Length: 312
Image (cartoon, rainbow, N blue to C red; front, top):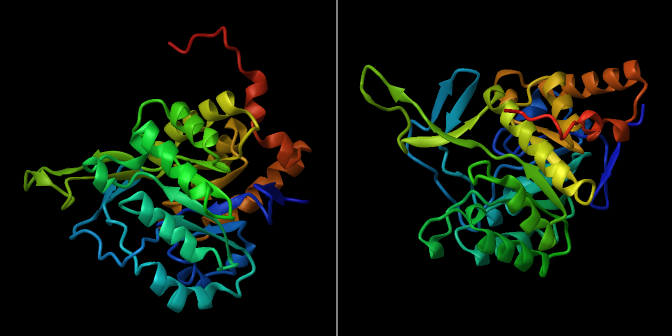
């Protein structure tokens, strides 16, 4: 069965990718399986300069999920290109660079540094980062700032630009539309939800940063709902990449039936490193059993949608 999918002018082997921050740069997983079987690898976030991240503790387990406040630790784009890129250059799958910065200029400089790296086929903008010029407000929480950032990068780079939307803004559709109106080639929905955990014996927050990003199966219904809303509003005008709570075939299919053209497996990589391959096999089996194609699957649940039925 043909599981290939063409998005933003690029042909991917299949719609199962791995999410940023949960897979490193793909090197560790090579000890477990052939990652060239994946549709794409989204790298751990890359910044202009090296970052050591937050003080521990910076990970906490929660019911059906986890909180993290790693602080986007990474070696910086220059070290990535010199030390890590040569190790992934031979791997037969696409890599997408997750990019972030504290200013618009930093975002742009990281992307420009990666323009000549052929293995990197697209950029995924992490807009949940604090904008130091705007008092620390995340880029993805201000419509004007977000639109300007996307427009600025699109005007300077040749590779496709995807935007990873924050679920903490209220109306994800408004922010998705702003990205598309300013040239985004795709939307990634969603990033982590803001949460916290308290140690009741110590009576203090568990994380050193107090708050962190909640991910894992617990956020699946929220992520599916936001993918649904984006697809309902934007249709097929822009590809949506579903991420959030995906840990098995059923959860991946929910994202795709809601409107995702591809999915990213994140937190599941920690508790079941082989989950992306299992999901890929599961999708193929599902399509065979129901005599469907991938095209039939994407947004397939919307044909049953009844706008006259109130969800209240």
